[in-house]
Image 1: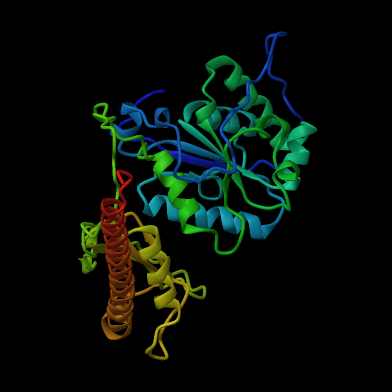
Image 2 (image 1 turned 30 degrees about the vertical axis):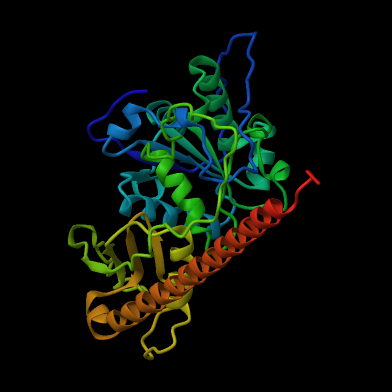
Length: 367
């Protein structure tokens, strides 16, 4: 995999009709699919997914392969490209960069060959075109399967499951056994997006180092403990000024709005993030300017995607503080309940063990 000082991410059209140019491959062509269990938890990833090269790259390169099957899907792809750019991925989208007269075969060949990752938007329409080698989708399928044969780099091709009742109907045959990320639903899951983002940045979870072999004794009693770290409330440190996006201001509805990131005091758990988003969407107190559905959390930041700093100052600041307070209170109360239950269980076990010892001492077989 190449290291680039200024990598690009490219998204291309793949439903443009044109006569396919065939790629010459070895007669002994074969593709070995990934054995990754597609139903495993998205953060339970093999440690070899993260490499030193990936973790040191400032802006990874990726190409997004999709079918122009509807205007709705094209808009969805453009929105995904915009979000990836805001999260450190330098995306070059065909809707922004492709011009009349450009050579489409060369356009797609370069995009697949020169990028570190290929993100494949899988839908039933895409699968049909790819399996039948029809149109731009079929041509890109030739390019991608040839690269797998030549480089053996299966991690480069990441399926994003966008539409379909089941995976087999939405996936090209050569991707059937691959680990996929589920992007179905509107909006799609932030957890699944985080799965993709950590992969592109080379920051996937890896197995912790192993400790030494423990010394085993004849009897090892384990009791519930109350020594767990107490819950630490999370706070908002402020606006991440350098990452505030620029509004389009093209006169269309919503074009004056933009995305604003807020730095958290620590990276929250998945449970904390889920509760916070729920508190934002359904606050106990809010103004008529409240915008449910615009908040999301990635890593150690909260994003309001579709507002202005003026709105934050006048309206959203108080709602953010309220959601933060109620989330911290909820989890602190939950943590306290756990500690009380653990203490009760510890006392119950101690009392039982003491009773067992007392009764055992009273029982004699010497008479």
